[in-house]
Image 1 (cartoon, rainbow, N blue to C red):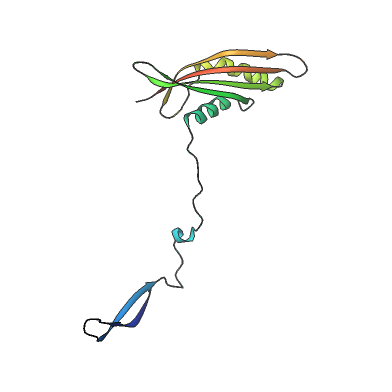
Image 2 (cartoon, helix red, strand yellow; image 1 turned 30 degrees about the horizontal axis):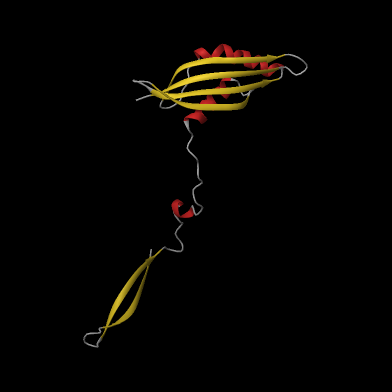
Length: 152
């Protein structure tokens, strides 16, 4: 640290006399390296918090081995006398022969899959509807329905 001492003069308005005093200021040493905190001059990026819906979509797409496209996702609040939660209905599109094979695995694995969604318990995971179309471009639309309960 460098110390700068300057002699200052203050005029006392009551008596009309001037008094001298020393003012000491501290400044950063020019030779010393700056601290990591002071080197970071850019503001922190805004990172939106991931919602439960985001986590549900991510879990379902991972279960589909990344071979599905998300078409729709509807979320509705659900409650009973003892529980609160949400009902999620997701429609996934599996296009192509390999994607359809992954979709069939998805259908088989969904009911028994152990979901890890913080603060939520997946009480029920079912397949609501399957629309499988054959032809030159094989395609399968799968509607998955999940019932999530808030953990307390």
